[in-house]
Image (cartoon, rainbow, N blue to C red; front, top):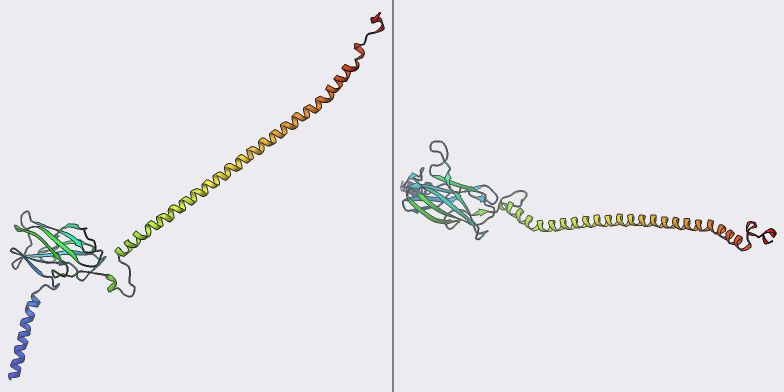
Length: 255
């Protein structure tokens, strides 16, 4: 009997230990107090993988009452930074990810983005909720939410590169491809220039050949004319030396 009582007491003790655990959010994000508000901050999808759609998730409540209305003039922005890209950030508005009585968890606000590198991320929240000013930063692991995981760790059977890795490869390859393209264009232009020069040279050679033929023909013509004139000139000279019958004086003339 005493053994049964001891076992029952142990079961009750274990159940008591499990109650606070069950009361925590299923995603195990930490609860952060900011004035009268409770903020549960983390990634909307955990584990989150680089290259996959995810979101900054902030669940806001006042005590045990979800903050379905941020109050007059209320609103939150989040600056997202990554240890993989120091000095860079993206700023987004947190929007309700619920409709009371329709879908979602009341008080759940999201800002969707795609984390492209694995590692730790920091969410810097600024704004006003129900008159309470907020200016707080929360970082993966340190503030009870997971970091982004390299998808290669869970890919099977083939490990595909992430979009970030593909972008890095493109950054390395694009200059080389551009250089090869410029070299190809320069070679094509040189080939066109050489072909044009060859055509120009051939045209000039044809012109020179025609001019040479014309000069040769002109020389032949001049030579032919000279040959035809030479006998006539020779005959005229002979006639002048011997005298013609018409040029002689007759005996009557001399008398």
